[in-house]
Length: 213
Image 1 (spheres, rainbow, N blue to C red):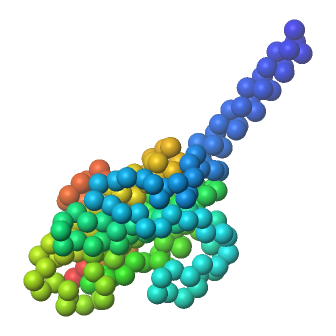
Image 2: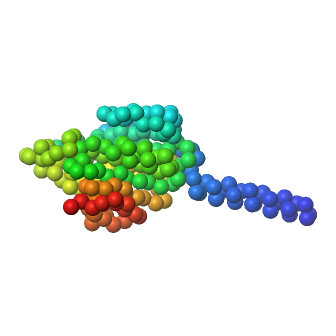
Image 3: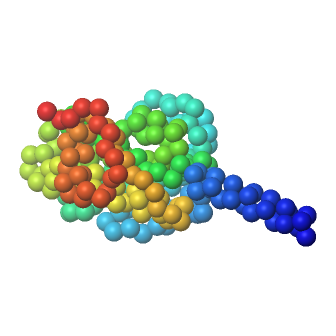
């Protein structure tokens, strides 16, 4: 009996250790990356759902990024209004997800996705997302005669990115993030304040290197 009791205690401790590790870090997804192309979300068209092997990857319009982990890349276009065309990308660690989400903001007038910041986030184990806020080019030429695009830039693009990214995370891992962060500087400070005013529960922390002046 004594030997049996020791064996049971060993099994319990081993199981506890495995469970604790699993809670701290998700080692694999519960769904298929490519299968996310079939995911249906409101006002959303998923255009890419692909596994990106570890190593080097070149995002659209950018130079090659190196030393990336294996990831699931999802690109989508969001149309919350008839004049909206919000581009987002969501990157999901295929192994070693830390259970957290980090949304990335923009600088200036935005107009492009912050791929460098997304790369930094996924190397730390975060599921991450970025957006061009609904236009291309870092100036305000797009705004004249497009009030809905102004709304997208003002707050809606970041809000929609966050909602859709969390839905994609939930679908892929069969679990939502246990903590959510928003990280940026420059215009990202304004974006973070807009997020907080719109939905104070959306993010647990805002990491802003500088507020919008």
